[in-house]
Image (cartoon, rainbow, N blue to C red; front, side, top):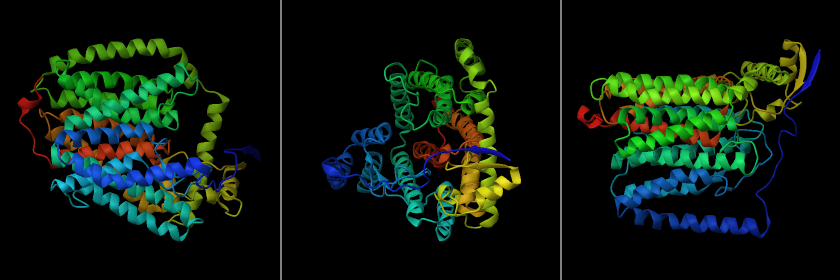
Length: 469
């Protein structure tokens, strides 16, 4: 029998909410900010420009997610997908945007389209897992995060439905991408730490860049450099692609050609009459040349990153062993799982899952970390019905982006659908090897993109002339 240890540290440590004058001041600022939300909502409802700036602030606030967060139930050392019941600047601005829209008479239904209805079903199917949870409080932390995602989606979708300002959406994503790259450069050249941007891990950053980077590539290819938005997309594409490569995430680097390739193919398919393959091909040529040049510069590091090592073999074994633990949990609790956000608690000695998995694999191990795929994580924690609902939620938006590529041919915002088709494909495939789509920031961006797709499905298609370069 082979003995090997994974993870490290205790699986569940109650950290508390902090103390002292610093914590008291932070809570005071939060409650004052919450009280100011209605006032801010009234102010930004007066002018569309102010509403637009508030939306920009909401997206830019993601760069300060940790710095502006208040956690009412903090479990800082718990090794799960949620460690606190967080409320921060992003949530408050999202609430202000929704209240402003309501003041302007643009209130919307809670479940206006198919994607958010599927999400509601997914949420409801996660609730029964609390019955099996070792800690209902820990489970509530993940449910709270899901509710905040619902709020954020409504802010994105509501803003678009009320204003039709897709340009502001693309520009706000570009702003975030540039700010993330600035933080990345500081980490690499000044702070000399592992470069991950504003994300908790470089794999998280790389997957986020593979999600939104293809939108910028598609925007540049469709619009060119004669339009202001084309320039913005070109700059954002460069920094997002560089950030993805800089992460040296093997999965993200392997998925990047698929994501960007599908985006480029989508633009070629959708704009062959309005723009023409010739123009798009000319715009694509410098991208290909820059890609080859960048690959040559980074080749030695990439070779080292992908070279088989003992660490890579250990990582492979870890994935297999944790997957075996997930299978044991799903075998015992196929309908409701072991409890949402309770995975780590079920790896403890009071549960048999690691021991049974070790017997089947013929080697010993002990982990306190999450399984390395979001699909098995959701299946083990919430049961097979919830897993099926999440897969349907993903597939619905992927299919919607594919259909929009056909429906929006020649239209102004075709590039958004083409880019998201590539981004969704890369993220959903890579999630077979990562649990990143349970990370808060990555979920924010995924839900942001889902809101864009929902709006594009319901809006009227503009004439092809709008997209001509």
